[in-house]
Image (cartoon, rainbow, N blue to C red; front, side, top):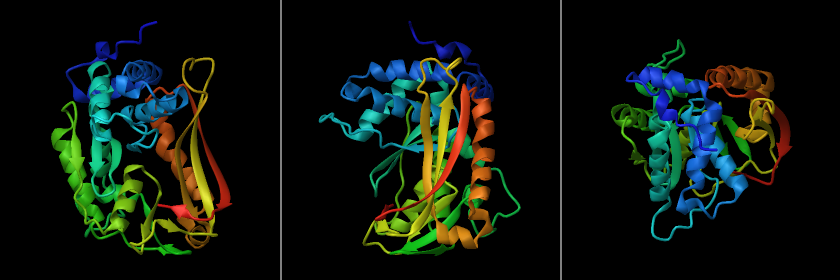
Length: 310
């Protein structure tokens, strides 16, 4: 069976396109999977990894989540960089699935990480002001930052800390670039942070991924922290209703992050009941708007690890 041609639903109003396609998550998934399977550069990717990649892309394209950090599989094309392969993948998706035209590929050069970011969602988040906005923070990224608790980590110690000084400008630069150019078919944005400023880069990733908690490494020499420290672990798991979601995976872990249990014990807003409520409030409405054929379960458990890699 041929995948649905979602371009039939496009209109001249950008806002209409954005809302109209939210009712077709399953159609977006089927069209995306068909496209991914046809790309020569992805023929080596296993079915399970391709399904995971497809779901993560659709979650961003439908505006359920702001961003996705690409980590699904290794790109084996020796003639092209991973960024070039992913850019071509996104270009193909944008041809038949209009909601992907709001998605940009962001390359953070210092860490060499690739993010798929929904430009429209970023504009909405960055321009929604809150009463808690700090006037010293760049207005463009203030709301995005206000939704995140920043935790300094060094060795096995952790405590609440201020926003990394370079982060507001980094987010503002990203929002400005996407705001000016997100209607183009493909965008690659290089974020020029100081190579030694790991704290800003780790916190930047957490904000783009919409984690309520962002780690801020206090030292530059290691990426391993919090060995032996009890962690509150949170998972947002999408569950598909089998009666209406045929063709989609039964479950998909959309987001997973941690918070030191000792920090949560002393800060009311980071206690499990508060984080669980925040995640439901943040994502359940978006899932309904996207016409997701199922529900989201938010899991919480406590875990101790040998280390946490940031």
